[in-house]
Image 1 (spheres, rainbow, N blue to C red):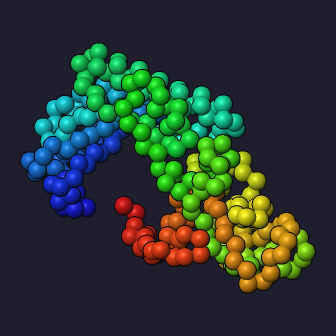
Image 2 (tube, one colour):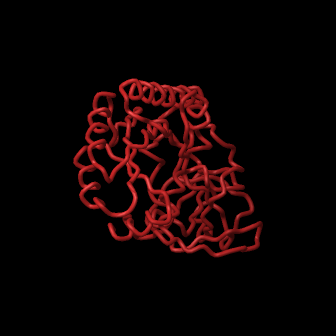
Length: 276
C-alpha cells in the first residue's frame, strides 16, 4: 500500500484525511524523506457523528502537530454531512446543507485567525451540496452519489426519477398470485441496504422503473413485488432502480453502458472485492 501511494504521489495530487494525531504521525513515519510533501486535510464533524472532530480546539491541536512534521503539509478541512439521509423534507435537507457550509466557513475563519493556513474548505454529500456550496467561504464540494443517483435522492427531492442512471436488469420468473411477482434479483444483487447511513423512510427496497411499484421484500436470490404490473409476463425484463446505488454496484463484476436497448460498452468494476 505504501509503495503504491509513493508511486502515485509522483504523478498525481493526493490528499489524506485525518482526525487523530496518531494517524498523522503514522503517515509522517511512512513517508518521511520520500518524494514531495503529502497534503493533509483534517476531518470536521458537521453532524454525522462518524469519524471527524467536533471542536475547533481539537482541530487546532491536530494542526499544530502536523506543522512539526516536515513531510506533511496541512491543506485544509473537510466534512461529510451524511446525516442528511435521515431528513424528512426538502426544507430539512436545505437546513442541514446550509448548517454544514456555515460551520465549515466559520471554522476556517477561526483557524486562520490563529495563524493556521487553511485553503480547501471542503463539503460533501449529494443532497446538501447545492445548499452548502452557496455559503461564502466554502471552496470545494465532493458529491459522490450524483454520478448515478438512486431512490434515496428521489425521496429527498434532490432529483426526479428520470435522473437515476443506474438500474439493475432483472427477469420476472414467477407470478404465484395476481398481485405478487417474483424476480431473479434479491439481496445478492440489490443488497439489503435501505439507503446511505441507515435511511429507513423509503416505501420498499427498490423501485421497479416504468411499473411504478416497489419491491416489498428480498430473499438472497429473489425480489418480491406486492403490486399489480399489468401485462408483465414470466420472462419479461424489469429495470430496478436501487435505493442505494453504491452498495448495489459493488455486488457486480461488470456494468454496462446502454442507450435504449443498445449496449455501448462493458465496464469492469476494478475495485470489486477490494477493501481499499
